[in-house]
Image 1 (cartoon, rainbow, N blue to C red):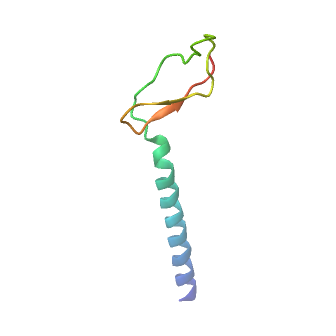
Image 2: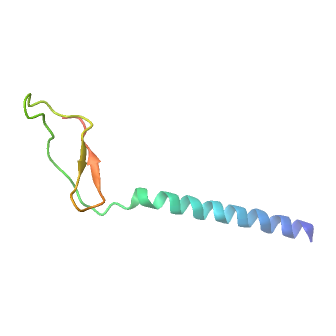
Image 3: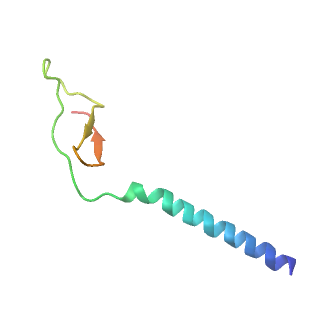
Length: 68
């Protein structure tokens, strides 16, 4: 009887760990297919701004500019 309770506790622990991992990783895969294209450049020097934050107004999405 003890072995059964122990196995059940382990299975519940594994089950909750899997559920936690799935729920924690789901926002990372929630891409809606939208795409932002363009260049972010300094107004004066016309050089690319690497690492600039880009946000869409009235949305909860955005990105960071990369190289060139």
